[in-house]
Amino acid sequence: MNFFILNPCVFLFPLLLLFFEKNTSAQIESDSISKINLLFVGDIMGHDPQIESAEITKNESYNYEPCFQYVKPIIEKSDLAIANLEVTLPGQPPYRGYPQFRSPNELAKALRLAGFDMLVTANNHSNDAGKKGVINTISTVKDYGFYQTGTFKNQEDRDLYYPLIVYKNGFKIAFLNYTYGTNGIKTRPPVIVNYIDEKLIETDMKLAHQLEPDAIIVITHWGKEYKYVENEKQRKLAKKIFNWGADLIIGMHPHVVQPIRELEILQKDSTYKNALVAYSLGNFISGQTTPNTEGGFIFEITLEKCKETNKVTLGEHHYIPVWRYVYQESKEKNIYFTIPTSPFENGNGTWIGMDKENQKNLNAFANKTRGHLKDSESTERIVTLGELGKVPKLSSMKKGASKSESTEKN
Image (cartoon, rainbow, N blue to C red; front, side, top):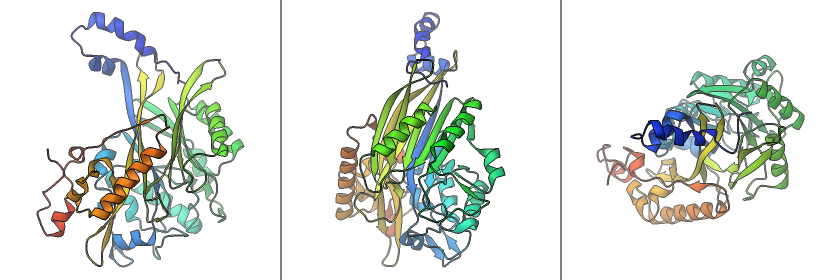
């Protein structure tokens, strides 16, 4: 693999300065290093109230686009945005939430319009709509232009497209995706769901190495629900996956946030590489009401490649807490939003029609999330109202004001 703790390009900077005295350090970095910015979010759920809130015409048309309007400006800035789709898309009603999630195809459409590029689909709800549901979910997300992995229509499909290789910004990245189980619902041949099987993962990792990617990223559906700290089983598996050659592990499933850890991994050539695991990103959007499941965090990380040596390192990484805001548009209609917490804390929630109770809940969730991540080896990125650009001020829209009003102020 190409990852090492030290970036060899660091030693080129003094030499470059001798020849380009007028260049700023940023310009030199740009000339000598290629970068790609990756963004990950946690579980995208589809509970009954969410389906009802998106419904336009019963069993016929749905609109989920408003749900992501306050995070869309963040997602769009990334080079590659990845999410866990924890529902099936059967393509026809009945649509329903827990315990067997079946959501309208319009959910995938809204995620694509929000700026997501990849959906992973190996999770404990992969089989909720049976074999046809697995197949239609894959077809639908690919029809919308997503990269997709974790579930497959058949063995030929897996052989052709796994590990998933993505080429972007001069980088070649391998993605792998696995789940601990499917809630006891059997996978019906010929479809395939990737389960966490150590022999399988090790074999897949060997194949990934043979493809010579710049980085290998493994997305795992694991851990215990509602636990704020990873368990020993997660830690042991993470270490094995890193020893097999992964550079980054992104975890899903617990529905609450878990820590972000950096590790130094001893390689076969006796050198060390820097690896990172985010054990659980929590929920990105859901209708769950269990404490602390009303949100999670966006995880951003930069990969850096030295143009002289083609060596790749993990660059800066940050988390952005996000919270589910249920906005009461009318007595009959609620809208589910995912919002970054930092722009709307300390009274700023009034900008989007948030009452005092919701502002209190948002602040409480944001502070708890920071508390759960305080020992993590990552830092929070503060998002401002200005960064969100022209998005609707809901309280004004409710009163029939112009949609041109936005958070783009001051």
